[in-house]
Length: 96
Image (cartoon, rainbow, N blue to C red; front, side, top):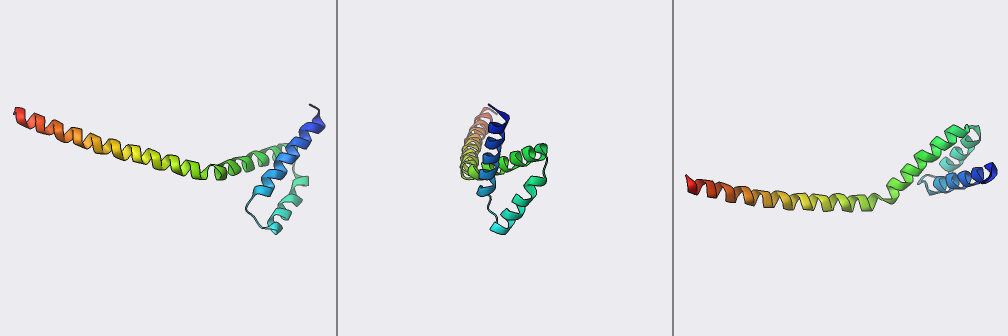
């Protein structure tokens, strides 16, 4: 892959990420006007930050469902643990 192809792919990726931002058109234009002043390293870091933000937004509902599911599992575990503890205390009391 040539440097030109790599640069084009990076540019497309950055364009998609900027287009996906939930910002006004004025803010988007201001952001785009800053890009030519950035170094390649800054553009790479900026792209990485936008990609993380994009993925966080894309998985927000899935993350919430997973957290809710894990909380339900923990609640059930705590309930069962309480029952086991109560049965154990009864059994120990009956021995004494």
